[in-house]
Every structure is written in structure tokens, then in C-alpha cells.
Length: 413
Image (cartoon, rainbow, N blue to C red; front, side, top):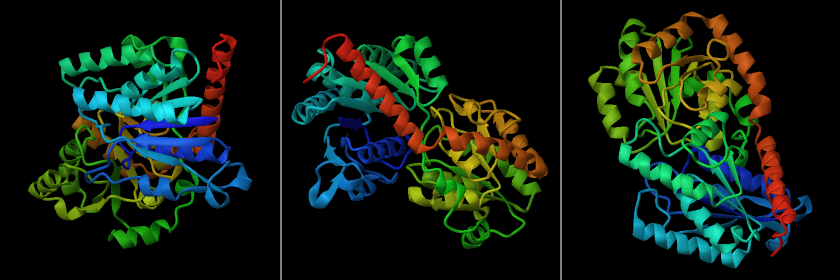
């Protein structure tokens, strides 16, 4: 197949890693793979270097490519930006149409909200409506949610309903996303299929260095209880809640430390808050960490806390369980599909800072119980979140879409 993926931004993030792993896996299967995205900027990192250096020997199943190698063909869309902008959005739509017209793909697979609206519109106009192109969209996280302004939610819901009529299949990274979308009138239930977001599980099962060596590198003592988080320092990720819920507990427990992995626009403000609470010296800010090293940092933690207010399915939760680290998370979106309360972790009502602090306190005091939780979670995640399974599941989605078009007599270029 000839496949075009379209994503809004290629920053270091869960949906972007999902997309890149999909592209790599599909290239290994011998497909021709294109990846289009908007400008990459800011402190949130980039996955472009990984994409541009990824190669597959033709002997492994790839076709074409220079020097006997196949690669992912990248395309930057200058007007594909995250913020609402009618002029840039229209230009991005035209850029997508030109790209699709030039590549003539079998499948256009869009990711994230903005690229999902603009990309589906373009793909539908270029062949999706006629059935010469299969149009697939993945919902990594819905743009409308309880924390958003009402007028913005109204725009997002209308846009998603409109775009759902312009694709053949909608993939969701968890059942919760499907259920929320259907309740909002976005698409039909039969359009949906859950494909859990895959990852390179070996990096979490077998980190590059030992837990002890990583803790020593980060400056932690052997008896420190390290409370970690892996998330962009940005709105709705819950870092303020971490401070509010743990500041007092850190005063009562001198061996409690925090490890924050990630960077973002809110870094300076959050550092000031930590200092104002008198705990700045007990928080290690690792900053941006390459994807292949995240497992090393998780291994240094005693518990991972993920108080995000919206996420789709938080990848850091299965990553922690794979790495042998128990989880405390806000009970939002698909978190409960991995962090099953009191079975593979502890769930807390969103915004309940007191409950968040009590959950961490429980984890600190119940070592044997948290180890059993982790063992149960790891066993489930090893199967569900393997990137190879995700690629295989997507392959089936594409085949079903194309077969459906052929049955209706509208397939073919």
C-alpha cells in the first residue's frame, strides 16, 4: 500500500510517537510511507530526526529507496498549525490536497485534532468520496472536554461531527474515546475500532542501565521514595496538583523526592511555585528526554503519578507498569483501562489533590501491595501495548477499509 499519515506537530509526545511507530512498522511491512506535519517549534522537542534517519533494507520487504534502503518520506505543511486560524487552515487544506494528488495514496491516515479535520477534508475531496482513497482517522484525545471553554467545545464538536462524515474508519486509542465521541454525536458506532497505542515495550522491560545506577546519576539516595511524572510542563498536565497534593507530605517525609521528566512553556512558573513551597531542592527536573531513554528514568521511580485532566489513553501509565513501577492517576478518559483501581494502580477523582496525596502516601507505606499491582499490570501491558500488535491491527483496519470500497464497486485508482 501507499500510505500518507498527516499529523499537526511532530513534537515529543504520545500521539506523535504512536504515529512514528506506525510509520516505521508499515515501512518494515513493505509499504510506501509518507508523513506530513506542520512546523515544529518550542521547548517540546521533535521526533523529526528519528524519522529522517530511519531506514529499512529492501531485503526486509521495503520497495524503492536509494542504496537498497526504504525510508519514510517527510513533508512539512507550513500552514498546519495547532491554533484556530481560518486563513492558515484553508491554506493547510490546499497543501494537503496538493500532497495527496501528487502521492496518490491508497490510505490517508490523519492524527490529532487539527490535522484530522483539515486532512480528512482534503482526502475526502481528492478521492475518499469517490472511494479511490481509504480515509482513516485516529482519535488520540478528543479536543472537546470539560476543562475547555463552552464556545470552543461547540466548535470542536461540530467540526468532529462534520469530519466523521468524511472518513471510512475512526480508530481510537481506548474504548473511552470511542464512547465519548459517540455520545457527542461524532460518527457512527460502526465506524469505530479501538487500537491501543503501541510502544517499544523492550525499552521499559529492560532499561539501558540499572535502577541503582540511574538513581545515583540523578542524585537520589537508596532509601529515597521517588515520586515521578512523565509529561510536558503544560496546561492540564496536573503539575500544579502535584505541588498542592505533595508539598505537605514532603515536609512530613524527608526521604520523599520528585522526578519530573519533560519540558514545556510552564517550566519557569512551575519552578517558582516549587521554590515558594520550599521543595524546589527536592525535585529533579530532567527536562526533555529522548524517547529511547524514558524507560531509564521511569526505572528510577518508586511510583509514577499522572494527574492529567485529559489524555486519551496516557502512554506513561503502561510504560510505568512495564518498567515495574506502580501508578497513581486521575480517573479520566482511558486511564482506567490500564490503571484498574486497587488492582494495577490507584485512581483518583480529577482535581482531588487531597486524594492524590493520600494515594501516594498509601503507595509509600505498602511496598508489597504496590509490587503485586505492578506485576498484574505488566502482564497485561506486555500484550496490549506492543507496537508490533498496533501495526498489525492497523494493517487489518486498512485492509477492511479497502475491501469495503471494492465491495461497493468504487475501489481502484
